[in-house]
Length: 226
Image: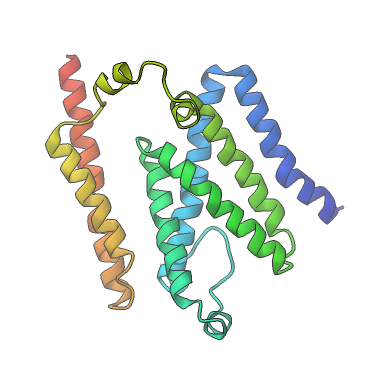
């Protein structure tokens, strides 16, 4: 016996709500697991969705139908679709980076709202409920980082003391390599008009630079603790 669509759509929203509530009430390792799992899931969804659009459906994504070129051409939306793909690629990278996950979570909220209302207005079945569930996980990530977000809503009473705090950064060579790798990945995502091979090769090069910078920073920190 298969569950009715109504039950499935309800669970798409209810399960993320329950998971978020339990993670925050219990806390500890369960909350960390929720945060890491949500970042990986949402980051992979955005990264895959962006590559899917930027590669003209040649690279598989985890969600979304193929781009309908006839529909896009009818309303002159080809450039808009490429912009959404690039934005999803950037958000996915930010979420998966860990360090910039909060910025990725902030940018992801309007992306989910855009998808929800677009699919709702187009009468897509099921997609608005599924993406609403992902939005719940997204809001959970923002709630987790509220101690950092609160300064956007409530200015600090002692602003000079906050400004005087040192920023937590990696050594300059690692920082430069990280930004170089991220830039190569983003530029590579726009190279499909040249060729799919050029696009994937450039992005793999950028990913290798990112991983190399992260590994270098890890071993530097490990050596400093010894």
